[in-house]
Length: 301
Image 1 (cartoon, rainbow, N blue to C red):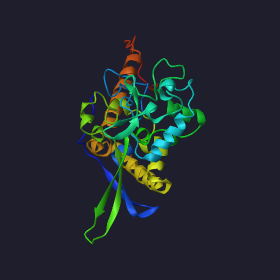
Image 2: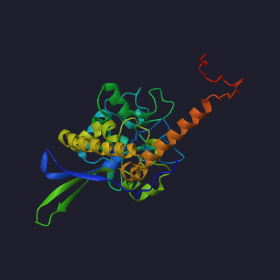
Image 3: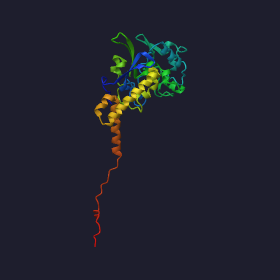
Image 4: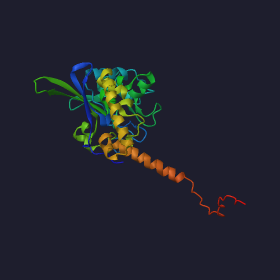
C-alpha cells in the first residue's frame, strides 16, 4: 500500500504537565489514537529494499547521552554467545571495548554496523531468533525493553521534541511535543528510505491504539501523571470518532482518524466483504408448484 502524505491534517492537544507547571505537553491525537503497530517479522519490508530483514536497524543507533551509552554497555556485557550473534565481534580483543561494538559518525557515538546492519541485530537463522538481541534479552528477563535498548530505538516511531515558548507577557514555558516519528524525523535522508512504517497502512493493523499499545514508552517519555492526562484526551477523541461513524458522516473521518489507519480499516472491510461474498451459498429459486388455496369462509346455509 502507498504511504499517506506527510502534510496531512492532524489534531493536537495541549495541557500543562501535572508534575511540572513550567512545561506543557503538546500531543498529536491523530497519531496517538492510530492503529499503528510494529510489524517487524510480520510484513515489515525494512527501510532499504535490499535488506528487508533489518527493519529499521540497518543504520545502527545513536546514543542520546552518556547515560544512554552506559546503560546499553551494561546490558551488552550480560549477553552470551547463545543470544548475541555478533558476540565475538563485540568482545574482540577481550572484554567489551568501546571500539569493538560502537563507532563514531559525524562525531556522534553509535552502535557499530556489522555485515550491513546494527551489531545487536540477530539475523534470520540465528538459533535465538531474528531481531534485536537487547529487546530479546529484556523479554527473557521480564523487563520492559525501554530499560535496556538505546533510547532512539524504543522511542521510534514516537518522537519527543522540545522548544521554549515565549508568551506576550514576557513569561515562558517548555513545550514537550509527543508525535509521530515520520520520515522527516530521520533528517534529509528520510525521504530516501525505500519503505517506512508510520505512514503506511500495512502497519496500521494494531488491535489497540498507540497510546495503549505503547503505554510503557509514553510513561517513560511523559511520566505517569502526564500519561494519565493524555489517556483522558485520547479517549475523548475516540468517542468523537465513534460518534462520527455512528451518524454516517464519513467526511469527518479524515479529520479525526489517521489516514493510514483509515485506509487499513477500509482494506480490511473490503477483504472481509469479498470473503463473505465468496463463501455465501447461491440461493436456489424454485418456482411454486401450485398457487396456495384462497382463505375462504364457509358459506352460510
